[in-house]
Amino acid sequence: EEMVSNNNITIVAPQNAHLEKNLDPEFKRFMGEPGNLNSLQRLLQAHIIPRRITAEEWSNNATHEALSKDALQFSVKENNVKTVDLAVLTHPNAAVRPDGVIHGIDRLLVPKSVQDDFNAWRHGVVLAVKPEGAPVLTKLSTSAS
Image (cartoon, rainbow, N blue to C red):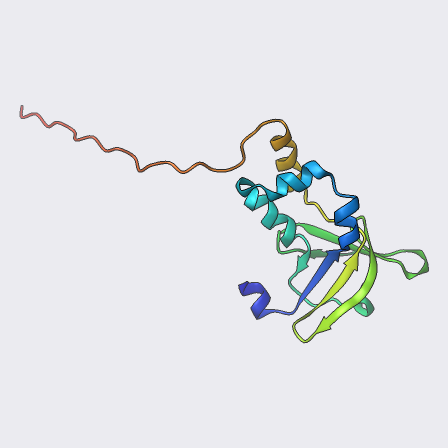
């Protein structure tokens, strides 16, 4: 929230149709479980760049760091098709505001760390950190010599 309130930002947002039709139902379930909140946060942060990049400023082979700390590769392909990693810009400059810009893309950007978490979850690894009680201190006995 602090980053968003203090900077111009760029958001690359997947189309709702993609999320509804093309996303693995098991991945949706994984992202919806409360114990996977950190993965969901990293997934969302991978779509936010803490600087303003309009479609007109899109440069070929430029790397920008997302809020998730993942490096996103921006490119311009044949026929001026703009991409970010494997996603194609389908709605450049979909929303332009004084505090940033939103571009529509054709797929979800899934950071490797989230992919790893999902794969671990599918194999039964618990990702949530379970709270633990405070350590129990025992009184040391002192003996007079």
